[in-house]
Length: 190
Image (cartoon, rainbow, N blue to C red; front, side, top):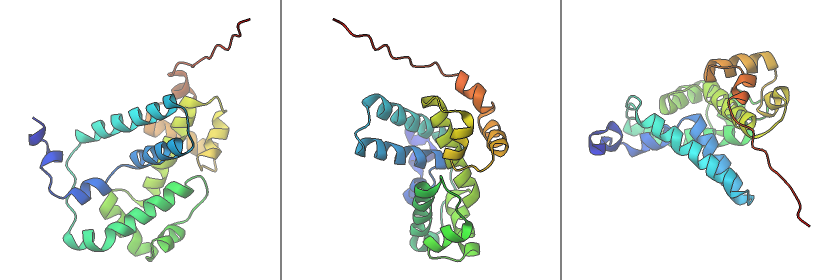
């Protein structure tokens, strides 16, 4: 059955690889950082599970429009460079000009290329990365929502809450309450 899926029939593998959603790129970066920092196995396993879950969810979506040969040849590196820059800097206030300059393009040309390759505007991509980071912090920490808002790169708690609610269909505080708290019992013997 898998061979009949659009994913496995698509010969344009570059389009498939580059068109990962911002959330998948964020999780991939988080896994790499967790492994490099010798994080706990449970944390790494949780990130991997989230990534696999997101990939499987995307396999059922509509097929990706193939990229032209010219776009693949000349602009894939531009989009990858921009995605890496945004992943490294999503917690701070970055401008379109800054991302485009890091990708060696004019802002107008960069925006057009980025959207053609990723199916998202640079702003949408950055927003989705920030929201995924916030969701991860809400699930895994006890930080106040306002602190998470600023740590995820947002400058306004109300905007963050509205964007989070739109993406996850619940406000951040209710999202947190939907996950059981992991309580560690540190009892000493002796």
